Amino acid sequence: MQVNRRNDRTRSSLSDRTRSFPSSRRYRGPGDKNRDQSLEIPNVVDIADTSNIAPPVGLAPNDNSGPGSESSDDTALLDAYSNAVTSVVDRIGPAVVRLDVVGPQGRRGSGSGVIVSPDGLIVTNHHVVAAAAARAPGVRLALTTADGLRLGARVVGADPDTDLALVRVDENVLLPSAALGDSRRLRRGQLVVAIGNPLGFESTVTAGVVSALGRSLRASNGRLVDDLIQTDAALNPGNSGGPLVASHGEVVGIATAIIQGAQGICFAIAANTVKHVLGELVRHGRVRRAFIGIAAAQTALPARLRHLAGVAQESAVMIAGVDPGSPAAEAGIVAGDVVLAIDGVPVTGADELVRILTGERIGRALAIELLRGGERRTVPVVPLERPGRTAA
Image (cartoon, rainbow, N blue to C red; front, top):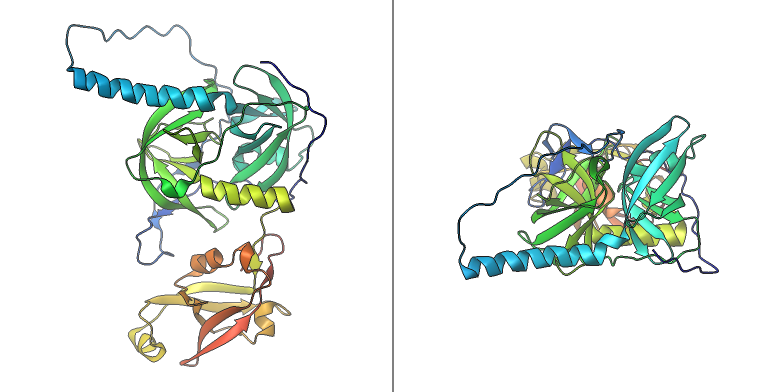
């Protein structure tokens, strides 16, 4: 690959949040009435390759040739499908890289990434590069491009809550890059192509469809990764961090997890989430989230309370504790209060509370509707930026 040198580059600071995205065990659908309730699913795992598996050799050819004929219409459809997939691969394949985390005893794990800017900015999964992000002693990150160029790289930002990380190459080079598309335009049944490096097989291509939209996986830290794309495009260990691409050639997701033992149930982080996290990491070195200083849990609303409050929702959030000096404490919120809504949006569980408290809410007054002693009241609260990884 011809490498063009450049003179300068903006570098963002290393985030200090380095907890890896763990195996998740729950998901929920976008149509669930109670968004805080999650359906238990066995063995949801991330798909970083942590083995040193070499590609098998000596495979016998699979000869499926034989007599038969197809209609011209069927042939045309198959050709169109084939052309769509190969067009995506030709366009995006050169921007897909392999990432290896190398320690004192050799390779500790590997995954994939996609170059999103020509100066070498790469998006991948946090769980792929967690050890490198933590700057563990003797651990380094190695990058291999699609045409075999080996480059040094480093983690410049990470967000474990969304399992995303930002990597930059060390050398001043210009590289092929891919565009992030609008994942809101996706439709169920739409063709998607996954490109990655599963189980040591570099630049592997699989294709499938969008099986569902708006899925959520729960991490072991209790957070939900929202707005995931479910696909039946085959993903395996080593695909983590690689792109999921629509037929028009834009990246619509980043491969992140599979359900172990299931066939064709794989997940990717939506491109719109990626764009938001990417912007936050580049501008601030972290993903900002709002904080009001409460510990809370879901609570059922009996019919009597629903009648008193004049609400239809069957659950809300009960305040278990309030941090001294926090925005909630300053607003007079106390343990035992029940949060019904924030800015008119019903809060049916703790997950809803987390979703509402985005970075855009920092410094902006929120109207929090409470039940206290059977009486409904509204209190204004001005969130601060969440310090580290605390409760809401």
